[in-house]
Length: 502
Ligand SMILES: *[C@@H]1O[C@H](CO)[C@@H](O)[C@H](O)[C@H]1NC(C)=O
Ligand SMILES: *[C@@H]1O[C@H](CO)[C@@H](O)[C@H](O)[C@H]1NC(C)=O
Ligand SMILES: *[C@@H]1O[C@H](CO)[C@@H](O)[C@H](O)[C@H]1NC(C)=O
Image (cartoon, helix red, strand yellow):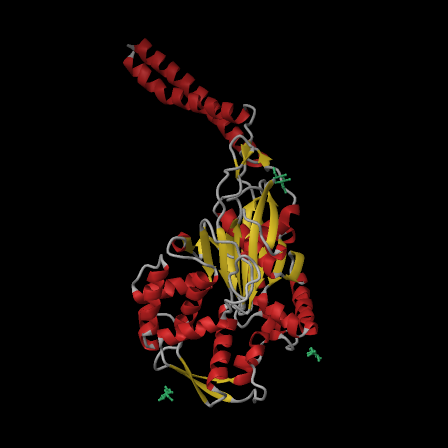
């Protein structure tokens, strides 16, 4: 009896397995949700000093809601910004090639034609347009032509206004922090009612400050009403042209030349000791609308001047303050240059050149910088360092380290005397390069606002297995079932025979 029981086990197991297999396959095949495919969007950030490309992605079925769009990849074009190719036929278009080629590889081919492609140019092109609109138009025309030659869906290539740049940066910051709205599990939009975060952006040719305010904005050109997810935000924004780090450095040099006279050698208190640099008066200093007011009546643009660093914090700070004008405010209050600004309030995120400046001075001084006094102490130490001490400690190239003392003094004056951050409000500034894996800048906000028209796609529904392999496996299980039945019958008959013999 025991023998017969054990001998039938394999046959029964085989039977059960095959029956379960058939039932699983034949029962109304449960629809399995395929992971949603991604959609992509490309933004070229054509800054004054260089062009960066950001590729974003989001699930094809939900393009709506915070935290859904993430950064897929980025690319930083070699060479200068597109405005630096003014008068160089084809130069600006060619400079985008490497990044656009990368986009072709980074985005699945099946998505290429649905991928919107944008280019936003900022203060570098604003300045070029002010100098020679024919040249800026030509650059934009060439760039558009190049973008159209790729398989993506070209949308626009345009020069952003300063306030648009500020507003898009603010949208990016608050989108990445999920401050706008959240898509709840109930399938409804939830408003978290969170305080928004202000945006501080420091580029090469301009700087932006943008934050939500409830006070009356006395200059209506600085007031924006943004309706996002059905909610209205009152936002103050101002973009200061010629207050980006590169144009600021030019203006500082121009100011020093103006005070010291057009000599073959000038002393620069913001450059490190033992650091000299040869510059051309035209190309490196006066060849910009930002330095027009410092321009000597007569000078030779080809003249070389040796800039000799003296690394003197107090003299540097004094000269940097001269670049700003803190007088003649015609409103109830101003930041500087007669620009109205309400008091800063709430949290802020400071990105782009703010982030790097903050990183370099805290690294070089070993001081964590969360207050104006800590910042001042750190800058004093940094301005006293030689260029080799700086490059050794940070392992960063000289081209970045030579300007840390100058730019950090500028940032200090801008944030404290300019925007009015004090010991109480400064700690609420967070210096960040990235948030949620995405670079913080205007590019993401720009795409989010402009790509509202990208059509949504529903879930792709399909069976767990396509019909070909599915039929094959069903056949296999039926064969297995027949074998099981046969095996069981043979085993039972054999054991009967044995028992009969006993
Ligand atoms: C995004 O969500 C808002 C709010 O539900 C809705 O009004 C809007 O049409 C949606 N946009 C897209 C492109 O689906
Ligand atoms: C602007 O640039 C174009 C092309 O380089 C040149 O022909 C023209 O004279 C320039 N105009 C001015 C006002 O400088
Ligand atoms: C820099 O300039 C100073 C002052 O003219 C000079 O003494 C020094 O030798 C120069 N150093 C270099 C590396 O050129």
